[in-house]
Length: 61
Image: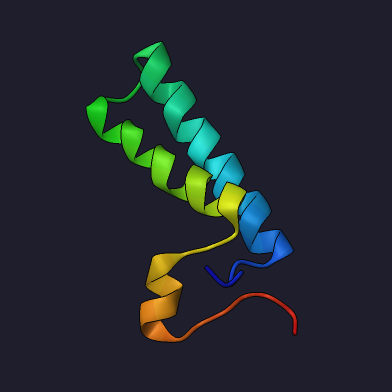
């Protein structure tokens, strides 16, 4: 896995993921909020499979 998620992108993914999971656990939003696991994991591992398919990288080289 080659890193393709930059610093700002990483921070936003982690924040959005945590917010979605938190809202799901609090009962504010439905089960679909568990989709927050995806941006959380892509932010933690700094790798986004969708970026690889499209050929995009938000990392500075």
